[in-house]
Structures are given as C-alpha cells and as structure tokens.
Length: 348
Figure (cartoon, rainbow, N blue to C red):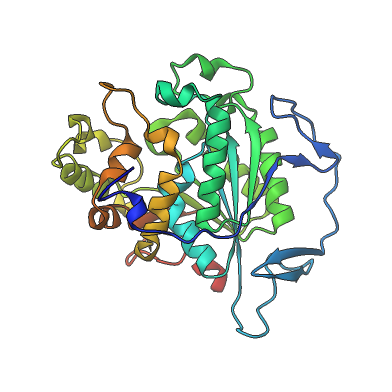
C-alpha cells in the first residue's frame, strides 16, 4: 500500500527472526505430502530440557511445565503455542495477543497446519510462482514481526472451502485423521512444555473445514500433552455485527460486508471468557496483516477482499475495530468482567 493510510506510515521495528522448521518426528522428518506414521511406540525425550528464551537458556524441570522465575525480575515466563490453519490466520485472530505475549517476555511458538495453497490471489501474484511458497514466506515475515520464537509447519494441504476440488484431496487437512494429527501437535506441545494453546471455536469461526479441524485436533492434542490452558480464538458476534455495520458505511466497501454477514459466526458474548486488550500492539498487528500481501491482491473488477478492506481502514478505525481479541477458555465458566490475561489460570 502506498500513500496516506498505508501501514508504512506506522513503522514497526522487526524482531529477531524466528526459527522456521518443518514438522520433525522423533526419529526423522515427516514428508510434507502426506506420510502418516504411527508414534504409538515412540518415547519422548528426557523430561529435563533446556530452551532458549528471553536471551538466555532455561532449565525446565521434569515436574514443571514452565521455566523457573527470572532470578533478577521475579517474573514467570510462559510458553504459548498458537495453532492455525493457514498463513494470515495468526494475524487476523491472534496477532495482537501473540505480539503482547512476546513483548511481555513469554515464548511464542506458531504451528501452522497448511501453507494456504488453495487460497485466492491476483493473476499477477500467481504468475510469480506457487502460491503456497509465497504464503509461507509471508507467514515467516509476519511471525518475525509478532515476535514468535519458532514456526512449525505440519505439512498438510490446504482444503479450501467444501465445494473446492482441493477439499477432496487425500492430503487435505480437513481429511486428516484427527488422532494422527493430534499426535503431531501433542509432540510439539510436550517438547515446548507449552503452558497454553490457542485453537479456534467449534464452528471454525465462519465454517472453513480446516478451521473446524484445528479445533478438533487442538482439543485432542492438549488432552494428550496435558496442556493446562486451552483457549479458543474467536470473535464477539455482537461486536462483529456492530463493526461490520460501521465498516459497511465507509467509501468503497462492498455491500456484502454488512452485519448480516455475521449471522451464525463465531461466539455470542455470553459464552466468552476473555476480552484481551491489544490496542498497544495494533501497529504490529497491522504490519503482520500487511505481510500477507498475496491475500490483499485482487484483479481489476473482482471486488475487494477482507484483508484489503482492513488494511485500507484509517489507523484509528483499525485500532478500534481490531484492538480487542476474544477467547473462550476450556474449563472456565463465562462471567463478567471478561479476563484480559490469557495466562490468568496459570497464576492461580
């Protein structure tokens, strides 16, 4: 984007480059095309581990899922694993939360099921090469901006929407065996000693098959790994309706972005447990979204896309509309006021 209102007007300092790796089994890499291997008889590494976090090596004792408190500051860093279906999902639903957690000194690990190869893009973008490769590079840039320490690709194929030919492919994530995929994710959770995991709500927000599968796989993986906190990243349906009503009145926004679009999507207010304030990290979230340039690309006459609309919002409107992120924590009863700290249950 160029000119007034573009994200370049609000520079964001890049953070350290995250470690980016394909999924690795305990005895070797799993091919990205679909080679499902049983891990039933494989054992995990010794329970004592060392991780590099906040500029230093930490000893993780066998009886604890978290590093010991910082000897100088007395703060307790946690490890957050954020599980997503496609590149750009991490920025849309959880970008502010990830940036905030990283800024507060926590370790943030991003796990992505697919490379998003079934997504849409302009003819100009598609002419540059495989969309999946471009979207991988975009996510890695987004992860760097958000402060993620590690990115792990599970290697499944983007399913696309139910009517798409890609949905029937054997390697599609929506067709993956939930138990096998959960074993892959559970292994990452154990090795990382994850304290918290973000997934999606049961309907996958707006019903995308891969988003629904993220919920199913994440729930089972957390149970297998014994991850203490599981948070469904979602939206407040009522707030979404009001936001769409306002956005729909802005010049150049298609009629399809009206409040009726939110019917049946995401989560009603009475079911939420967290309302996380990420306004201080809105610039970072905006830059992470802008890193996914292929998903903002459109051909002439084809209309606007969601990412295009969001990046064209004046910054104050963007900060208002995307400065809050919403969650439902498993095992916690909804109540008022909603929590602002995703690690609140760990501090009890």
